[in-house]
Every structure is written in structure tokens, then in C-alpha cells.
Length: 240
Image 1 (cartoon, rainbow, N blue to C red):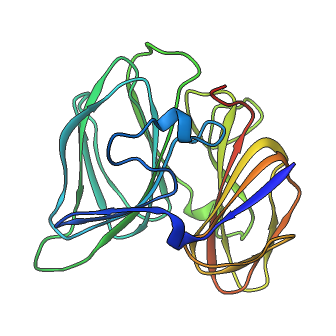
Image 2: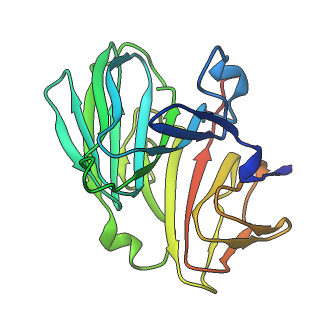
Image 3: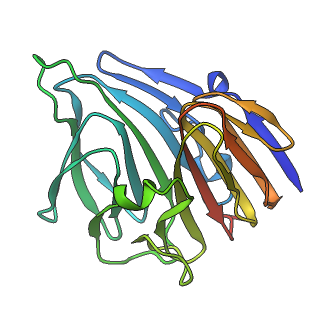
């Protein structure tokens, strides 16, 4: 059983003229994503995209890609004919399967100067070669409860938007100061403070951008010190 605290400032940092990317696992450059993964989680980027900018059309294959907006609005289009505006409280899932091309841009115009801050996460599917697919789910009502909400899962016993891996689930909680949640017990876990600050049982204070990686454990209490948004991956398999 292990708990590893990863301070936000220790994340891999990459940026260019319009993108500021803070990466829990190095993703930009010549990196072995599978070798650096924790459990099934191989990409976990907190990206800030400047107004009017974004990623032009590019391709993915055999990957489950989840996008969670923290600030602003993301504009999505893809080669399967899907398009949408993704705002806070709306979980987006793109299953790349045999191949899909898409664009992701800050929907804000240059004149409005609204930044886009988004967490993008990649896990592998549990089977390659599937037909590409796309889905969105509005979970703002569920999050208002202050409880830990399963927003995406391939596990039969979990709710949320469906992902193509039966061994993984993503949970989110929006907490007021003093509210607590419990980390699910799993072979692999990843807890991320998307906003605010919190106290993690047996670790201590966590700031925005901090993460805790868990192996063969769970049941720890996370208590909000300030108004907070907490994201938790529950994973029952790994690449090995």
C-alpha cells in the first residue's frame, strides 16, 4: 500500500505562444506514455489555452479521451461529424477506436480574452479496434450535492458517461469548506485538486494542482479547506 504526494509545481511543464500545459505525466515530447502511467492513467494535463487559439485537426487511435473544463468554453469538432461546446460541469468522452480526427479550441474570441482551462485525461481501451464514438454528459445537478459523483465509467456498477474500459471510473466532487469525501478503494487511484485546497488523510494539506497517487489502498478522507473541486480516478487494472 502506497500514497505518493505529487506537488503541483513538480508536474512536467510545457508551453508555447498560446498553450500553458501542466502535465501530471510527461506527454509533450518523446515520452513513453505507457511506461510513465499510473494504473491506466497515462495522460492527465491541466491546459490553459489562450483566447481564439487551440489544437488544429489531429488524429488519435485506440484511446479513451476525457475532457473536463474548469474555466471557459471548449469548442470541439471531429471527423465523425460531432461538434459541441464544452463548459464546466459537462464531461466529454471521445473514444478514438480505429481512428478519429478532431479539433479543440478556446471558443472565446480574441476580444473577450476569456481563457480556457481544461483537464484532459487519456486511458487505453480494454480492446483495440473499436468504432470511434463521442458523447457528452451534463452532471452539474449531481455535483451540486457536494458528494463524490461518478462522471465516467466502463465499470458495470458505476454511473456516468460510458468509457471503453471496464476497469476504470472517474469521479468528481465540488466541495464547500469543511465537506469531505472518501477515496474509493482500488488497486490504483489518482486524486487531483483541480481547484481550491484540501486536507488529505495521512498526507496533509493539498493545494491546487497537487495530486496523490494511491496503490492498493483507499478509504482516505479528503476534506475541503476552501471551496474545492476534486477529481479521482479509480482503476482496477494496469498496463503491466
